[in-house]
Length: 360
Length: 123
Figure 1 (cartoon, rainbow over the protein chains, first blue to last red):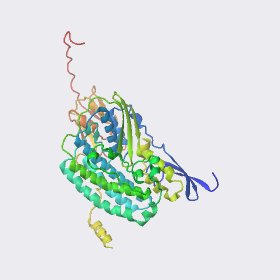
Figure 2 (cartoon, one colour; figure 1 turned 45 degrees about the vertical axis):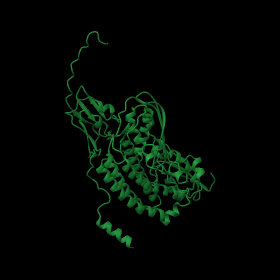
Figure 3 (cartoon, rainbow over the protein chains, first blue to last red; figure 1 turned 90 degrees about the vertical axis):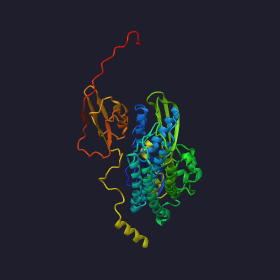
Figure 4 (tube, rainbow over the protein chains, first blue to last red; figure 1 turned 180 degrees about the vertical axis):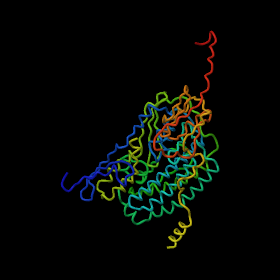
């Protein structure tokens, strides 16, 4: 290393990082020359548990892969097993899964918005977004019985129902959330300082984003309309879903994608409630799965992929999870070199890292 | 200025934005597991289905143990219990200084007398 270069270990414990990732930054004055992300601090060996626990018990294990998108993890797993066993889930259960998945997307994006606001020093905005998030958590708490790990998915359907009285309360609360969100949206969209910190920072072009295999808002922010919800799993096929994209590919574009997805989620929940038919919540499932399957679902951060291999026994032979952050970490290698040291918190948070999912 | 005044006025007259703690749990919230041991028939289904292995059922001695510190309150045991002995209460447990396993003692049902297989039946 030459004289004017220095090495800064950024993380795994750092005030702006919510999770343990280490970035080895080589800096020349204030400019970053090289960045190497290192993971491996929170590996828990959850995939290996699939060979010990039976297929029903594994639902509660995969839910704990991620604290933010736990509902979607269980949904991906259950959809995979259902595909293996040729189980047709009741229509009502599909709509309920969609509603809970969208609520999880909302609270994930609101959490991210708060952390992002905190990263560039907007303490009050951080609290305002988390105040709105608290209302989403209340909806989850009242409808599913818990705030984050809601444990509603089972193989063959869902465990809980949302009755008419609760549906009315949820829709009223969503109206309040939408009103509050519009105020925060205007601040984040038009504020001078936020624009200075995000516009033109960490630009990834459409082709580069596709070549690096990015997923979720990282890819949509670069103008590539790639979203697993367009495949129509659960009830998304009936809701007329169109992915949201922005063209610029910088931090500001990705922020706009996430904020517009919040409003889209509210619309999707309203549509799902309007179209939700009466009926059963779950079908009884007997027997054990056999064969292998790949199941994909769009999480808040991007596409999650489950590879499930079963051999007809009570336990699975292999479970492999590929989470969106694993794909998006590649973007850090591209956007960090050449940027200023002061922009590192914003650049790291723009990929919405979830290291606990990545390492499992 | 007018917008700021409006917000200021709203903040003075409105209550807290979130539900303050300690708060009343919603109906159907998954707080902690309780058992009515007099209903339990020690079939051990709860212990078999429990994803975290926090339940230990001993049919011979008639004990039903739960390690509340390992329990993830998923509610599977309550949903599979044939006699509805296990239920979920909305309130969360109080923090404890020492971890301990809650042991419930009940009376297991008497073993049914073995019926002898009819002669000439399947082995």
